[in-house]
View 1 (cartoon, rainbow, N blue to C red):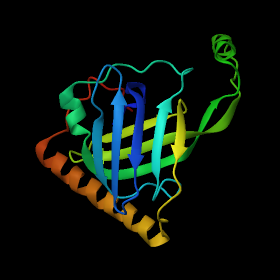
View 2 (spheres, helix red, strand yellow; view 1 turned 90 degrees about the vertical axis):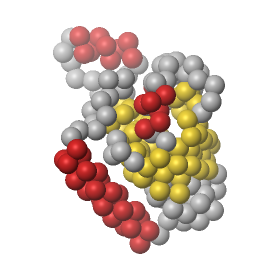
View 3 (tube, rainbow, N blue to C red; view 1 turned 180 degrees about the vertical axis):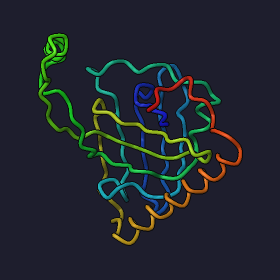
Length: 185
């Protein structure tokens, strides 16, 4: 299951200028203070060594109010997953009203590929958190350092080991926290 949080976020900052650590600040609708995030690991090569600022476009739908403090507390610390500003996703190649008409008529909707911001991490409790959207304008700094192939492989290994520990722990104690407030997959 994944906590998909893009609908809650109005803007944010993501900082991987320190090797091995990612710091984030996510401002959510109806909340004054940002959610601060600190995860072990690095972003993907396009964001590794960089500072990223992002803001929801004025044309994007308004953000939904943030979930409870208890849910947000689960998201604050963890291990980095895939974090990139260039996740390739399929999007309709037609205006939204034409897409709806084609779907109602049972016709195929043509698609195209687009780059989405995708920030993924796993909380200390093993919950997967994903912020993935096309609705943000991005500003990315010049990298202070570059991710090596060895560092990239080490990151994958750390994530595999972490998820294996979480899986063993959850088998021994039962399932993780319920996700009633979030859209999940």
